[in-house]
Each structure stands twice: as structure tokens, then as C-alpha cells.
Image 1: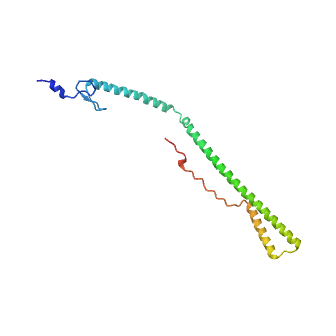
Image 2: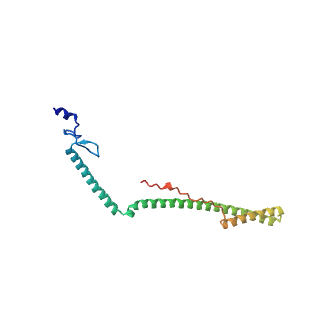
Image 3: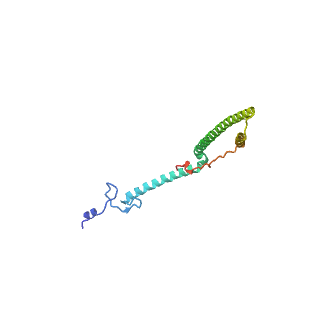
Amino acid sequence: MDFSNCQSQFEKCAIDQCSRRPRSSCKCCKQELCYQHLWKHEDLLIAQLKLLKKDIHEVNRRLQTVNVRESMSNFREHLKKWRINCYTIIDSLCDRKSEEFYEYIDMNFSQQRKNIGHIQKRIEEFIKSEDGNPQEINLIKSTVDDLSRKMDKIQKSDFPVTVLPLNIDENLIQINY
């Protein structure tokens, strides 16, 4: 019986240049290995596991010692700056609207003064010429009443103002995890 021909029918160890027959299959990589290479292969895997054990221990130590509040300080600082900038924008809008309203009131007062001056002049002319008629007097009364109502409104600050609520979109602040 010639066994030399039988040897070639068997597979070889998966490691290059190894002529030994495979004796077992590695469960991790599914390679067919001889005993010597299987042990070396397992030794490498165990060495890798020991390194991973050391690495996970280090990560766990860092996790145990990290100060979450301190780590969040940069995030909170960004939020604080954003909030201050938003308040600045709101303050600027309020200042512009106040100035706009002041200009309206100032223009209104100026117009009221002109109207009052014109009415006073007409009344003086009617008194001087003794030529006032009931229609003119009623027109002047109506104008004086209208001016008085406008002054009441201004003094009471009775102006309809529509202030819409500030809708804040949650997506204004996005956390990139």
C-alpha cells in the first residue's frame, strides 16, 4: 500500500508554507489549521482579548473620573452666547419700534399744534370781525372735540398694539451627537 498518493488528497494547513494537515477549524475565522498554527492562532486571539480588556478598563476608568458638569461647560457657553444674541435682537426690535412710535407721536403733536394754531387764528378773526355764523362755529366745535379726543388717546397711550408671541422653533438649536 502506497500512502504517498493518499497524503496529497488531504488539504493543507491554511497558513502559507505549512505542509501539515489541518486538524481543526478555527471557530473565529473558519480556517482549517494544523495543531501548531491553531495554538498560535488562539494565542494571538487571547493576546488581542487581553489588549481589549486593558483598553476597556482604561475607558471605564476615564468614564468613572469624568466631570460631566465640566464637560458640558463649553456647550452651556455656546447656549449662553446664543441666548444673549437673541436678547440683543429682541432689544433692538423693541428700541426700533419705540423710536417709530415716538416719531409718530411727535409728528401727530406737530400736526395738532398746527391745527390748534389755525383754529385759534380763525376764532380770533371771527371775534375781530364779529362775523361768526352757526355753521362755522359748529365746524370749529367739531374740530376742537376731535382734537380733544385725539389728545385723550395720546395721553392715555390708548393705541392698539399687536404683539405676536415669539414662536421658538426647537430646531434653532441642534445638537450634533
